[in-house]
Image 1 (cartoon, one colour):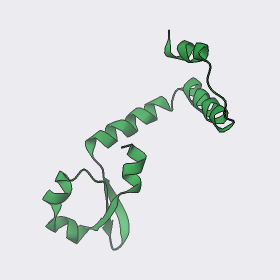
Image 2 (cartoon, rainbow, N blue to C red; image 1 turned 30 degrees about the vertical axis):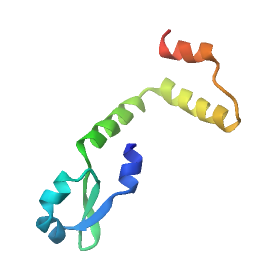
Image 3 (cartoon, rainbow, N blue to C red; image 1 turned 90 degrees about the vertical axis):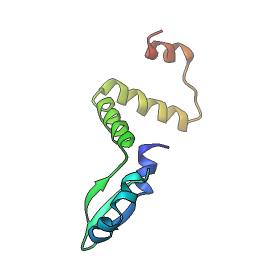
Image 4 (cartoon, rainbow, N blue to C red; image 1 turned 45 degrees about the horizontal axis):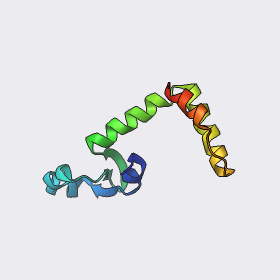
Length: 93
């Protein structure tokens, strides 16, 4: 499951409710937004999701990679495929 889908499926839990069910929340593989008076104040996500988000942030620093992703999305939307030669070059083969 991707980080984005986990975040979209996050639960909202109030601070009082969290106190009473902290062990359950910590054992859960779900993401939670902790609210105070109905307003989100903290996000609780599984450690693996945090690592995935950090990897994504690092990848976004690579401008060449971001351009390649945009080009790939455009080609995919147009029904085009990526030539194997370009794919091999991108992967360093």
